[in-house]
Image 1: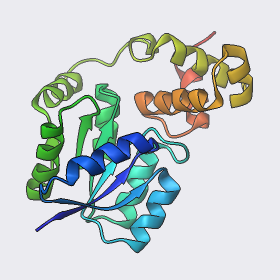
Image 2: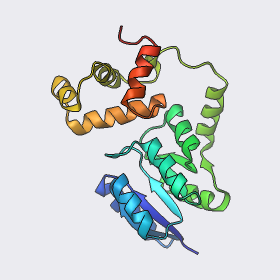
Image 3: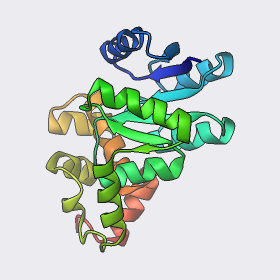
Length: 211
């Protein structure tokens, strides 16, 4: 029996590569594709799907919120996150939100296929190294400051957001595109376990950042 997969990634080349991989008669059938959260939700309403292969870093709804949204409306749907991030905090929040598994985009095709079949057979997949990191993190004290979590560029974007700057303002000030600003903002929320800018600002005041 084939596993019907819905691929969601805003990069067409990534989607095409996954489609090509699954065409090899490996018991996986691409039921549909989507380039963002809005397209994804539309496809879920019109397509029978067993597993959602999801990139969290896309335009539109925050990745963690999107996972929660999907699990609320489709509790039986398995979700495998395929992301460029491997931070323990990001993985942990994705799993808590309802993801069935999490793998990074630098994994091998063999690992991806193993993850899909493992989730469909047992409901969960997390590679041993990440599981060990998450177990260690849960028994360790939280980092004393965000500098241990965020990159220098993410810290810059964080500071400007707290100052009330818009995406356009930040784009001009840092000489980066609006899309890059949005990506940094999404990464900030993922890494700190926050849902929106209001929580981001509150977090900065609670931890006396940028003062």
